Image (cartoon, rainbow, N blue to C red; front, side, top):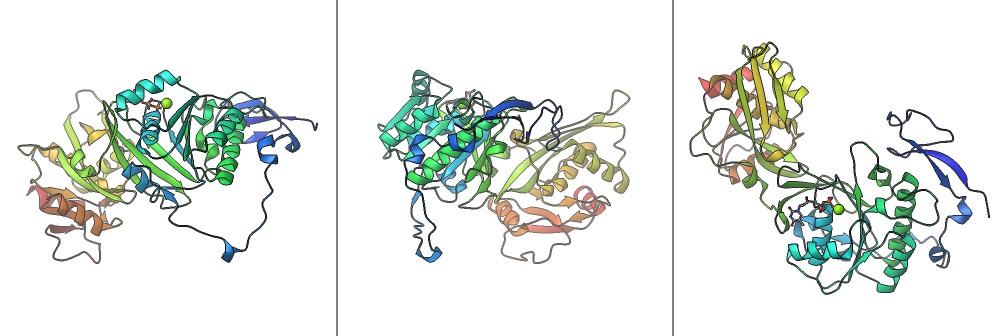
Length: 453
Ligand code: TYD
Ligand code: MG
């Protein structure tokens, strides 16, 4: 047998080094190198694969492609984010922080595909625990097998025996292969197990749904090292204090990557939110100052979201700035723009900003709404009802155009808004027929004048 070799692997990004180093030169993290034993190539193939016939190259025009071999999951939002269902033989990774609801959505998936045999492998929970959760979800699938196992070789044997329509692995960090000596969850184990599952799924055509944990401190191997192996990478995120969960696709070999699905965690599992705008706008009976609505887009999805600001006199010497769901540095930048361009003395004021629903928004188009809510709170004058905003604010106070403005306008109009503020620099803005008044502003000053004078 060929000799195994010892390498040091960064547990954060998967970089390798022949000797231990304190700081990873690749991801710049400290103290992430762990020793792992890698067997030589000749011992790395498990018996299951060596028995198979070796594949041969095929001519491109002779390859049979069957567009309709997509497997519907029974969860429409998940199908949409996957690009119209699961492709046979694909490896899908769902990453997320602990507690976000990965096991819940995986079990819901297993129960939603009622006419298919499902193999749900859990390395974390016992069969009873999963049974209890299934009771809580109040659904059942007579063909759903639960397998509490961590050894990859056993999983593959059972999967071959059952020949299910889908395999779910919860989670990739808990399973290990006997081919490697390192412990489960280490980068080489995670990578090797995923590579073997990929081969298995490509040979058999069974799609595999992998769950991967992400931890902030990087103690468990992050699914980052898997991103290039798998076909689809989905991230599940959300603040545990709120009920909303966002699922994004960041890589998809069979569909678009900028998809977003929104779920709501209720007492019997995750419920799809098909109209997000309705969720993120609170109905206020009377207009309140400091509250405005932004027409944003996340991925390909336009939705309206409430931005709330509270401006009050600073009690202590240094004014406080706090922001939830929005980058604090960007808030400081917007406040500086207001100070300089609109003559507002915000230096002696505390500013608190909150995006409704515990959602994080990266879309720069939210700037205009944030400025409007800060100004509205500062003056204590509510913004006229049924008004929304969509525009980026530049350093000199100019309102810049944003992407896919027609979609945003359409969404705002659909939600019953009567007025939308956008940048003056948009060309091709639909003039009529949108059912909404479009106000184009070029500078922060003109926004102030239009709103509050
Ligand atoms: P879980 O799927 O175990 O998270 P993960 O696998 O990502 O670690 O679910 C986490 C939380 O979801 C848990 O704290 C309880 C909550 N939950 C509900 O609110 N309703 C439900 O029906 C279920 C099953 C879970
Ligand atoms: Mg779990």
